[in-house]
Structures are given as structure tokens and as C-alpha cells.
Image (cartoon, rainbow, N blue to C red; front, side, top):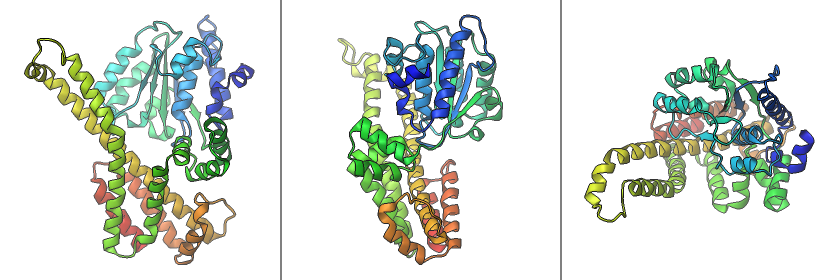
Amino acid sequence: MLIRQRENKMWDELIGQEFSVKALTQAASDAKSSLTGKVLPGFSQAWLITGPPGSGRSTAARLFAATLQCEQDGCGKCVSCISVNNATHPDVKVITPQGLSYGIDDTKDLVREAAMLPGLGQWNIIILEDADRLTTEAGNALLKAIEEPAKLTMWILCAPSSKDVLITIKSRCRIISLRTPPADEIAELLIKRDGIDKAMAHFASHASLGHVGRAKLLATDEQVRDRRSLVLQVPFELKDLPNCFAAAQRLVDAATEDADIATDEMDEKELSNLMRAYGEGAEGVTKRKIEKLASSAKKELEEGQKKRYKRITRDRLDLTLQELAAFYRDVLVLQSGAQLELFHSEMKGSIQRFADSSSINSTIKRLDAVEATRRMLNSEAAPLLVMESMTVQLARA
């Protein structure tokens, strides 16, 4: 089975995860055996894939789903494999929570879908990304469906770590833990898969902090590199309170601009599809009548879009905070004399001067301030106030 995987290359995009790939392909084989009545000890219908941002949780879930649906244990070439990888398979549903949390109403709909039999595939597969966003009520509603799944239903949950998932959910799942992919393997992927220049691939793989998707963006999008440079200038600018407030505003503005770019086109398309569904463009249907019919659905759509915009903005700010944490980590590496590679090696001279001008104790306080800010972003606090508080703390450390 593993030889076939290497031949078709389907699992190659999940880099640095050899142990997990072996476990998931074996699990798919066990699931296939269960369909014939042979239930092996490792068989499970509920899986939790964990790993840091960019490690490939969603990719692993998708490839696992493709392997489960494939009659040849994941050939990568059949209709089932291709449709799962193209997100068009009718029996593989991928749920990505749009807001900061995933509530009980959404979960009840999901449970109903999980009770259905597969139409074309071997399994009815539910992939729930960001399962850490489940509210307690939603988790309790989901628990019964995971504990006693329908005969041909397979649950695949994704979360940063098992600690982020309700303990009752976690205890019913088999856990697959992904690691941060090595920078050298990310660089090799960028070169082979995307045709990236070797020097750029090396830079992007290290600057991405182990996030494969971000590595590609850094290698191919100059604006992304410019945004990163903007973030990395912040520690040098925090000389006084006015600069602290200005830096916080710039970081929030950059995050909201990214959210605008990510959602504007999507929002317009969703609204257009909704209005067409209610008769827009149809002969004899007035605009006033359409607005009246679609009023409730339009309001619900707009509320969902606002939640998505809020989540994306905060996700972008969290990425900013990861960049700052990596910067102060590099400062600490130089201050301590540790023989470790820097995430921002192209800035070594500037980082060394920063390290020489501050103490190890100050750097640790700054790292703590950044981490505390990441936690606060998950609350309902205003992002600008949170970022202003952080920049002031960084300046005073």
C-alpha cells in the first residue's frame, strides 16, 4: 500500500509527516477491511488530526478522505481520489467554521447530515476544520454522533492541539499529531512543485515559520513580503507612546485590508447567488418583491459574512503576532548564544544590534506580552485596544 502511495505521489504534499502518513494509510486499509466485516483493533470512525498552523491538518484530512473513498487505498488517479481532492465528492463534506465559534444550531444540522448513508462513495465523511471553535453546547450536541456514529459515517476533526478540543470529544477520537515541517523540506516542495527559485525557496521556507501555505505566498507575492517587513519593523519603532499607538494602528489596518481583500469578492458572489435564488433576473419578478422575499435570508447571510470577516481579521492579526514572537525568539537566540538557526536570518545584523541593546529578561517579557495578546484576541476585546496594550508593553519591557 505504501509503495503505491509513493508511486502516485498523492501524499507527497503532506511534507515532513512520514509517521502520520503511515498511520493514516494503515487506518484507511483497516476501514476497508471493516466493510467486509473484519474489524481490526486499530479501526475507528472518529479521528482528530492536530498540529500547529501550516503543518497540513486540512491537507491530511483531505488526503485521508480520498484514501478512504478510493477502492485502491489511495491511488490518486481514480474518480474518487480526484473528486475528493477537488472538493467535488458528494460524500465528503468539509466544514470550515466562518465565525470565531461554531454554535449548536450549525452542529445540529451537521449531526443530521452525518446520519445519512453515502450515495456514491464507500463512506459518508465529515471533515470539521477548526474543531477548537466548537462551543461547549455544540460539542455536547456532537458527542453522541461521534460516540455512536452511523455505520458508514467517518468523522475527521482538525485542531491545533488535542487540548483545544473538549475532553469528551477528544476521548472518543483517535489522535494523529502532525509536526512543524522542516524548513528544508518546505523549500524542496516549493522548488519541485511550484518552480520557485532555490534562494527564494530557502528564504520563504524559513520566514514562513513552518507554515507551508504561507511559504508559497512569501515566495510568490511581493505584497506578502512587504507586509512581513512592516511587521518586523515594529520592534525598532517603539520608542515612545505616540509610536506605540501608531504601530498598533498600522498592524490593525494591515489586517483589515487583508480581510477586505479576502472577503469582498466572496461576499458579492454569495449575495448575487442568493438574490438569483429568490428570482432576481426572472421575467415578471419586481425588485421590491425579491427584496421582500429575500429579506430574512439576506440578513442571515450578512450576519454570517460579518462573523467571517471578524475571524479573518483576527487570524491575520494572530499571524502578525507569530511574526513578532519569532523576531523576539531570534533576539533571545543571539542573546543566549544558542547555536540555532534564525527565522529571520536576512535581518541578522539588525537583530544582533537589537539584542545588544536589551537584556534577556526584557526579551522574555516581550515574548510573554505577545503570547498574552494572542490569547486576548480570542476574546471579544477590540483588536486595536489589544494591539495598543501590547505595543506599550513591548516598549516598556
